Amino acid sequence: MSGNGQNDESPREASPATLLTVVPVKRLRILVLAEEICCPVNSGKRMRTWNLLRRLAKRHSISYLCFGLIGDPGVAELAQTGIRVHLVRPSNDRRRWSLFWGLIGNLFSPYPYSADKYYTRRFRRKLTELLRSEQFDVVHFEGTHCARHLSSIEGVARVIGTHNIESQIWFRRAHQSQSWIRRIFFRSQAIKMSRFERRVLLQAEAATAVTAQDAQQMRNWGVSEISLVSNGADLDAYQCLAPATEPNELLFLASLDWFPNRDALAFFLREILPRILSLHPKAILRIVGRRPSRALRKLIAGNQSTELVGEVQDVRPYLARAEVVVVPLRIAGGSRLKILEALAAGKAVVSTSIGAEGLELTPNEHFEVADTPMQFAQRTAVLLSNLAMRHRLGENGRRLVTERYDWDGIVPVLEMAWLKALASFSAGTSVSADTAARPSRGVYASKLGGAKS
Image (cartoon, rainbow, N blue to C red; front, side, top):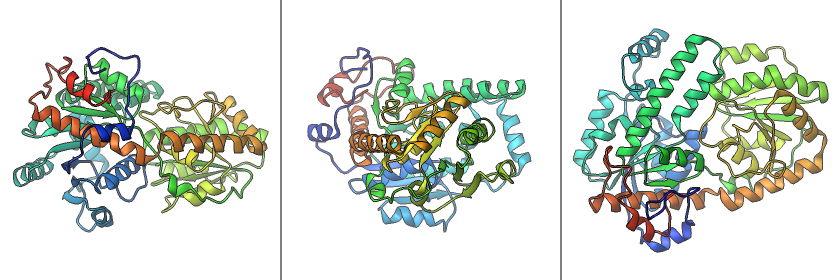
């Protein structure tokens, strides 16, 4: 939506330099609400949170409230950046029966399970204490799962920083489910999440979206104050990687405790890898990611063409030695940091359309796209056999990430979202759930050079 309240064909985003020269940046006091400590950085969500906040902590005073235990090394790592961490003890009951009864109880709740899961009395008490003892300019929700607390926060601007459209993931999971019970359950969760997302996004002073598609969905819900804060890559970290040393190596890089990634890997192992081996018998797949399940270990047991590495402190050596990075996702939302990471490392990537969704990539120029097992196998095998093609894709991908997806260029957009939310709140134009669709902040947005999306 543009500054005059009219719908645009696509979200607009002013350059970070333009944003920072339009409005002087004062030192803000920010309270971030999150599900967990974002260190160690071993998942896409943590990577985004870490790279945004550690840079913003150089310019603003940031407090970070999340579930966690005293003594967690991630607290010290965040403290080194100047971020003050406040912890709420998580539930100790992780037994299957506890999860089962939680899911059963959620059948009678208007909220999605993930929102219920992170809404506890301990967290609410700690949040209330912080808001009473300290004065904050903005409360930033790092994802929608903690946003059940939004309606109880008064006297401060509120920003919801989304990582994706959560309901989209649930709808896709329902579509991919084999049993009718799972389809019904996941679809019910998707409907609950869609209603919840829309309600809290309308209540907040501002929201951020990771992709233009996510921003469009928010506008369809009536959300008017949206900033496009894309995912990014740390270019310096991948600047001097050694060239690949394993001519037949494929790499699957993802958090293995996240269902969409588990589904993608199982799909690749069962449907795609056998076809690749029929075309390129020497190919080997290495799997890097945290918390691999017993089912995964059982699936690859005895497979000479597959190696499960598991969690590592530094993924760069594995990216360096790989020739092709594979992203066979069938369920996803937002955009994939794993692809940006691979492109920053100058690697050739083969991905499904869903895997590359939300990124400004051109097939055959920055990556190869394939949506059927045979297409995926053929394009991967061709890359393994064609050094010039791998280098061309890798160079083009690295150049694109340098131009569009450097974290240092993305951070000011989130900073401006905070400033816009604070200005809106201070001017008394904060939007309530029943008036959010009205363009009440067009004048201020136009002064920002069309920064809103």
